[in-house]
Length: 404
Image (cartoon, rainbow, N blue to C red; front, side, top):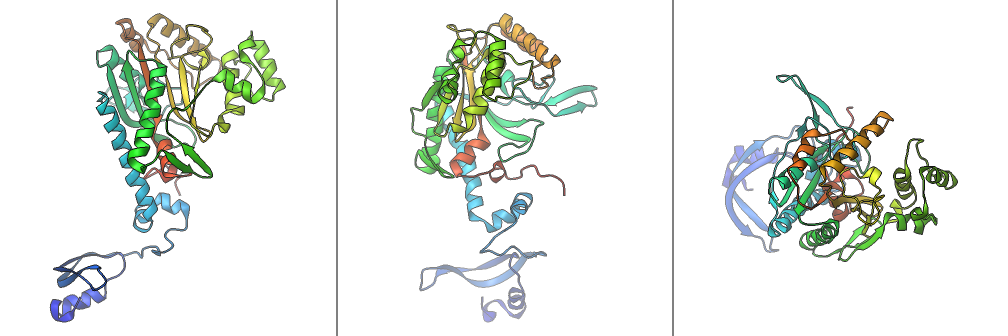
């Protein structure tokens, strides 16, 4: 910027500019002797004046909460944060690319539901004034996508926001992003293979490798991942073999002996799941498919034909966290009604996360749904894993924060 090129007024304006001001410069581009791209200014204009000083460019925002509350300042001063959110966008794009190439169709379904279904969670409640109707922000995408399978769309997926009225932590935010997909004529084993290939594909495309660092752990995402029945996982960790447990009373006794906290109304399957969550889950560091979930906690999954105490369902665990939930979908409307009725009993016993009866969904099943495999992946946790981010707030541009 030279005074003889731009004039006194523009030169003085330039000299008075502050860090953070947005300016427009017209001139000729050239490279200095050191190769730095520069502009020989012919005119200068102040486009926007910064009234507040920016954080120090070398140290950035030191207050972690300020980073979350004022993400715009974080992005200005923190290149790593910007890179995280660019990679988040690329992760979503590569998921779409993979599924589109496999013949899946991306769809959009309602975010406000008349019945909160598809997951065990507390919903946010709202009210439609014109219709005088209570509506629920969706806690899952599942049941509408299954209706599309009934309608003949054999491969569908949706990436969208889901809302659960629960606590806030490093792994939970009241609104978060999920991908759910459904494939007709597939089962949970097919979906296992799709899951590991999908995640590995995304890692290769975005990071250039399937070996990722997360905290102190080096995680290998190259398939094939470990597969372990929930009963076998619990037996490895505790020595308790739930295949041999014959009654709810025996399961309660084992829980007491092993210090597992359970509710008095819990049945065999609930207690097996508590053993898993309290003794096994956090030990699963490398990608592991846990399958064979009890029927009591899987009201939308198909029974295992060899042992009806369990379902053809799996969850994916990496670094001790659930990253995906999937199953061979229950497509028998009579069985589905019975499962919903069992959930209503649980709700009466105090389980406020139990499923409601959904007559409209059962009616859809009565028209006939082909054998189907379904999958849900939490996008935010996957982004955390692939960007080595310790908190879900690090991968949400505007995470929920308590009011000041």
